Image 1 (spheres, one colour):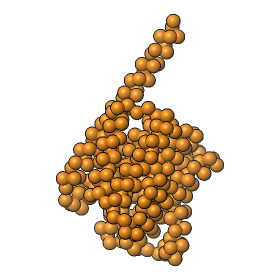
Image 2 (cartoon, chains in turn orange, red; image 1 turned 60 degrees about the vertical axis):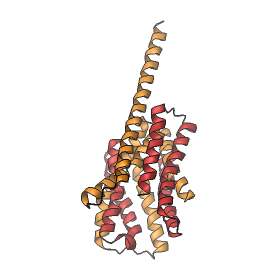
Image 3 (cartoon, chains in turn orange, yellow; image 1 turned 90 degrees about the horizontal axis):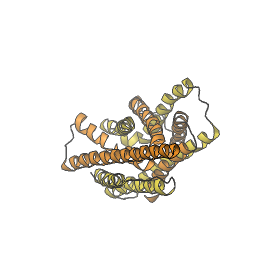
Image 4 (spheres, helix red, strand yellow; image 1 turned 30 degrees about the vertical axis):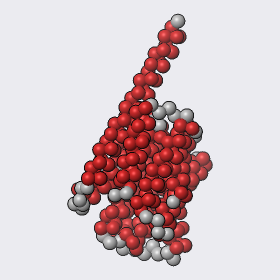
Length: 153
Length: 134
């Protein structure tokens, strides 16, 4: 459990390291999907005797969702270039509410009180992170105008 | 970030669709392999159209990130298989990784978080802990 926690945490840390080291999002995510696919295939070969002959439906379901995940990765990696990893990673994790809402809308699962509370907290959290970003931009503007005044003097 | 939020949330919904089709237990890992492969397929033309040639640095960092992503999934599955209850495993892995990244952001990358950001992170962690125990 702790190993899983560290691995997920390191994934976020390495995303920021990649940005700091000038890695391009498109190239990075193409290679990330390649490697991740290779690791999973290796696991299937070792633990499930290379059983890749599965109902076609499995791969047809994987097709659109894998592509959407690639778009998410590209958008996230581009986004952290302009924002903080501490807040961007939270937004990415908060997206766990999306499948919960989709399950309610598409599969008519029961909307529990807990999900409503989570939705509210997610909204409040994203609003506060947006305010944090605005506060940061305000400070940057103030610093820039202060620099201009100093140069003028 | 809004695009990342929606798309990243839609990705795991594939597991729900798989489960609704009674295919999840038997073909979970084959689905994940297909999922990553389709993501890889989509990004190839994007990279080629931009005329990007991956560097060695990108190759190595992507390998590390891919390993972290896969290992995270695998260790979560192992914890569940060894009898750890889901209502403990999911909040600890998601909430804990957020804390790891927030601490790294402040200590390693010297990010300054205003009070709104700090409260937002705490409320976000609370929301995720609640969601993962649902």
